[in-house]
Image (cartoon, rainbow, N blue to C red; front, side, top):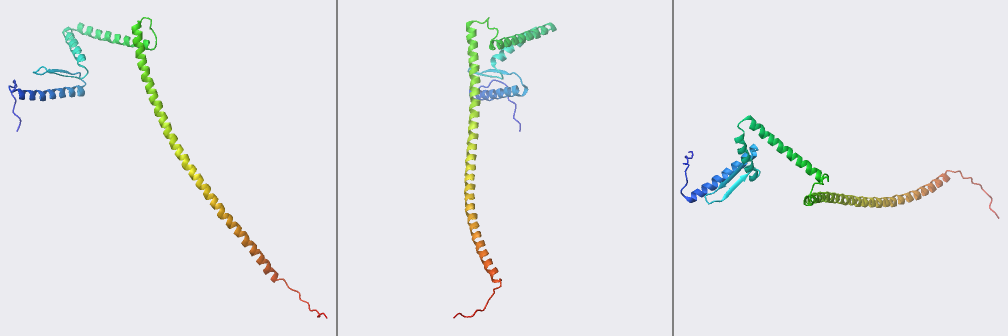
Length: 221
């Protein structure tokens, strides 16, 4: 069952009126924010409650919205014909040219050019801006250098650990080589002794096959 239509008139009950005001105010502000985001529109809302409390919302800034509204209202009264429209765009172009000129002049002053027409106060203000900018650049540079130093220290620790591991492996290999030398050296000596014994036995066997000459002799008196 659908909700019945609400009669649009002042709510007599103060509590109900305040609750309705809060709900509809929040809904209106939410819709205005969504409209500004979805449609890239510049939106400004000003609400005063029955008690005189102010509620407002602006997609950019309320001052900018109000200035643009006043300017658009004034120009809408003047743009009744083509001549007024041409004048409007001429003013817009002149304003943009002035902004561009101001930006170029500010850039040249920051670069240290065309400072002859500035007063002491303006020069001091420019100096403060440059110091703030230089401080920001130095902070960024120090941060990058600190990060690089930390990264190099981390890599150095890794390399040192790898060197220690390699040193341990080299020592282990050296110890294994020493053990192998001892084992193979003992085997070599034992092999020499067995060969010498085997040679002597062969000599004896060879002598057994040599013919022996026997002679008889008279017994001596």
